[in-house]
Length: 202
Ligand SMILES: Cc1cc2nc3c(=O)[nH]c(=O)nc-3n(C[C@H](O)[C@H](O)[C@H](O)COP(=O)(O)O)c2cc1C
Image 1: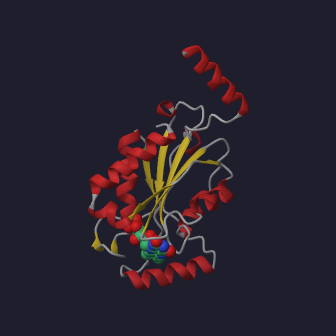
Image 2: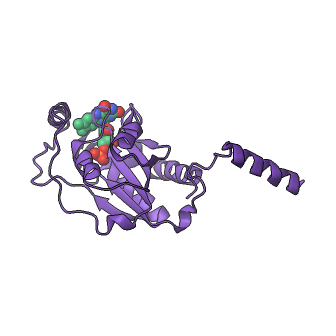
Image 3: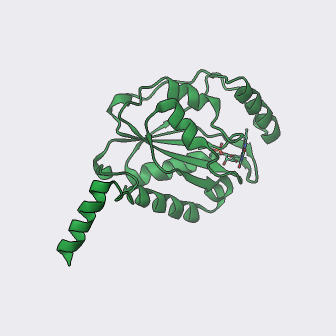
C-alpha cells in the first residue's frame, strides 16, 4: 500500500499537482528567515490608543515561532498623525502621490535571507508607501516572501500581488488577521499564525 502511495505521490509531483505544502520543496526549518514589518502605535481603528501596533504583535509572534530576525520599517523624521482620522488622510495623500518616504536604517546582510515575511497594516487596500521604499531598495532574486496583513475588514485586499509586482519574488499565500484580534485576543491570533505557518511548511 505504502509503495502504491509513494508511486502516486511521485506521479503527482511529476505532473506538478502535489502542491499542498505552499512552501514547495524547500525545507523551511533550515532556511534563514527575516520578518520585515511596518506598524503604528497611537490611535487605531476599533482598538483606541495602542502602545504596540497590531502588525508588530503578529510580526513578533512569527519571529518567535520561526526563529526569524526582525526588522521594523520606520519613516525618517516621522510626522504621521497619532489620531486615526488624520492618519488616514495623510496615508491616502501619500498613496495618491505614490510617495516613497525615506526610511531609517537597513537590514544587515539582506542577501543572506531565503524567506522574508512582509508584514503590513492594510492601508486603503494597499501597503504604507514606506514598505515600497523598502521593497524597491532590495534585490529579491531567489527569495520567497510570506505576506501578512492586519486589517479591520478588508483582509489581504490585493496586497500579495502588489508585493509580487514590485519584487518579482515567489510570494506565498498570505495571512490576514483582524487588528483588534491581534491587539485584544492574542491567543486567537497566535493560533491563526501557527495554522498559517504550518500550512506554508514552517
Ligand atoms: C491609514 C489607514 C488606512 C486604513 N485602511 C484600511 C482599509 O482600507 N481596510 C481595512 O480593513 N482596514 C484599514 N485600516 C485599519 C488598519 O488596517 C488596522 O487597524 C491595522 O490593524 C493597523 O495596524 P497597525 O497597528 O500595525 O498599524 C486602515 C488604517 C489606517 C491607519
